[in-house]
Length: 234
Image 1 (cartoon, rainbow, N blue to C red):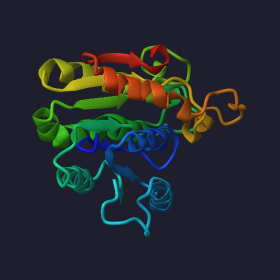
Image 2: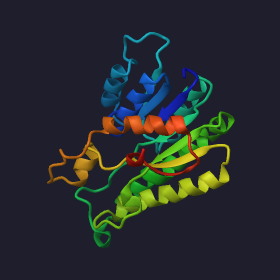
Image 3: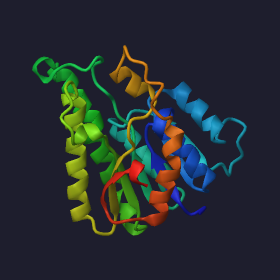
Image 4: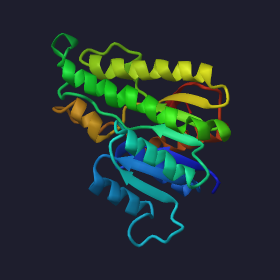
């Protein structure tokens, strides 16, 4: 599997970091990113890409913001150095204000930022990676949420952004028959973002992100048609 190359955004913690570990263990080469350089460096070191790693390391870590066109180009270029990505995991995202406000009170400037990060930047990175993904008959993962399909009170900003991302993914699948486009719902997980969504609650009953990695690897092995995937179903 050493020919497999993935770009994973938001890989310094949570689901992104767990997926990165699973893919490295399965023999993939990775380009990973996150906005926080120290956290990303720690994740890269854990994955074997720290300062002591040899030149043949399987992980390249690039700190930056996916809303920055230069950063997106750098991610794709790093994957192209290995022959091009055949998997893009659009995992990076932001929650928005915490606690989550009702739509009647949602600050529009904050909502624009939620859409910028969770929808537009994801699409922009996908556009940049598509030439390699087409050439390698690869796959795009849009990490989504049940909030994209269920009208949860207080989730109007994040949920509507995820709904927009899902519809973009569905249309992309219809337009790009050479590429699999999966809208992947990982379920409720014990992550920092999930805790921010419920700042006054104990979320220790939620499973850790590592628990869904086997299902994600099953998805890659099965390589089903484009569509919406609940990892719990795998």
